[in-house]
Amino acid sequence: MWTTGYFLGQRAAILSSDFAYIPLTILLTITAFFQVYQTRKENKNILPWYMFAVFALTYNIAQHIWSLNELIIDQKPFPSFADVAFIISTISLVIFFILIIKSKKQSISRWMYVMAIPSGCFTIGLTVYFFISNNTELIFDQILALVYPLIDSIALVPALIGIMMYLKGKVNFATCLICLSMIPLTIGDILFQITTASNTYYSGSITDLFYYIQITLLIFGVYILSNGRIRSNTSVS
Image 1 (cartoon, rainbow, N blue to C red):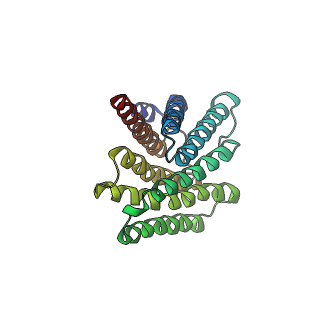
Image 2 (tube, helix red, strand yellow):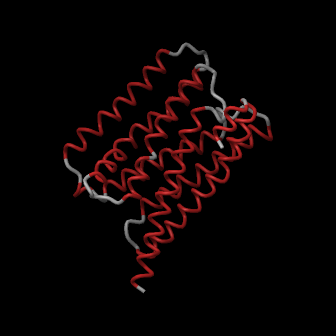
Image 3 (cartoon, helix red, strand yellow):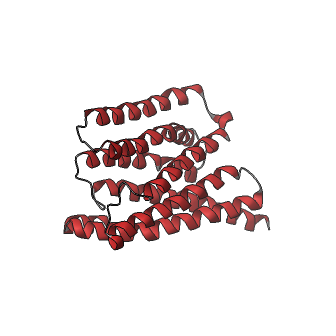
């Protein structure tokens, strides 16, 4: 879907992008709240999934505001009120990853921190470099575009630890998919920062492809977790 819109031109890419985000974010929100429902029944480690539900809901709201501004009101979607919801969703995602990894802290070794923390520091350094080297007069826009990868860099550390834990057999495949989603999100936000500075960003560009991948990984990861709980409950019954 992304490829078709991208190669048909900018207008087609914008339309396909905005309409793609609507079902994707709705499905993400449904899976998030269903996971909360499943976790509440077990009454075990529910706080991370509350934060994930906040992330999914605010991300859903942000994308709908973005599409509304771009398709109906015909206003510039960035910066806009959508960014308030985007920032809340990104912060919620950071808290979610920290809580998820914290619940598995007994399985985390020191070398995992040694390997994960430099990746977060590298992301911070890279985004700050792009910000400093940018000569645009729209300072507020660039500060706002800088905020997203900076927050991502914090979430990237526990996400990478989660991936390493999967390789060591400490977490399941579904958790690995959820942690993997931070990589395309970080790449997408860095590309968003660069293309916004160069005034080449538009909805449906290559940047959005990474956001599609992020949302898809999250949907499948959470679905597999929820489905596994259903199968487990049915087996116990």
